[in-house]
Image (cartoon, rainbow, N blue to C red; front, top):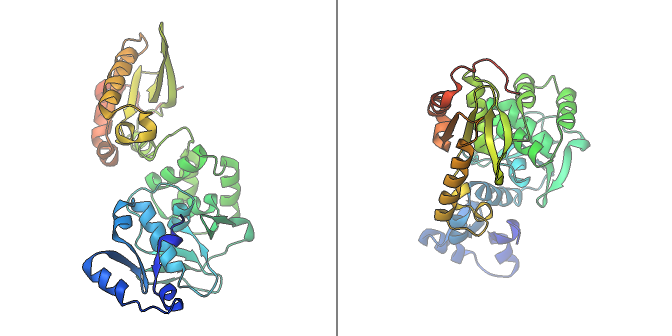
Length: 314
């Protein structure tokens, strides 16, 4: 069921000849959550939703009240396209309003006044939205390299757009504010980064002046394939791994294994990699380490990367 069909609207009750006092009473009692005037969602559904899903619910609630045609954009378009976002999803819903000459912002909605050719518009997630490439570049324009890399890496990894497509779109709007920041993020972007945490880590490592690593390096020993590592610096024989909780708790990533078995399997895998003659150091870090950067950088330096500054690993 789509997010829109999960909403409880006062207008729907009115069409059915019913009063909305039940919704208002349930809101006071905590049974439903108010997302917009006259629009609610079951509290249980809201509690089970992640931040992106909550933003989508909020977007459908707000969009359902608009009468003029708009195009979902920026962070909201990324949510419709299934992208990750560094940091919290905004409380406000973002749209491009073709009828406006200046941008208007309220507590629930931002109506952007900007150029929007038809080629930048698609139907995504049940709404008319800017394309994934347009939305990702709009975010890269307004955020730092970390925020831009997270969305652009994801777009390239999932083939939502190619490097060439993104560069062409950026070139068409190079006079727009933030184009330099977007260009830097796009030049840095790499679809081999398999998660937002890996994208965040890449930025922290390069901003610390360390060598750019090889991504998703495969290792084998006499027994066969061991696995792929997130980061590999052949210059110093150092392996780096970002440990996101999804690796241990996500059902897809566990492939039927218990979290405890995943930990055991990871230990066996790491021991096999460490035993390889070309591997001289191994570093692991968590989301918080990557976010602060300093603990992550300290870990890879301690593993032996100190002598690899300002070089590019091949």
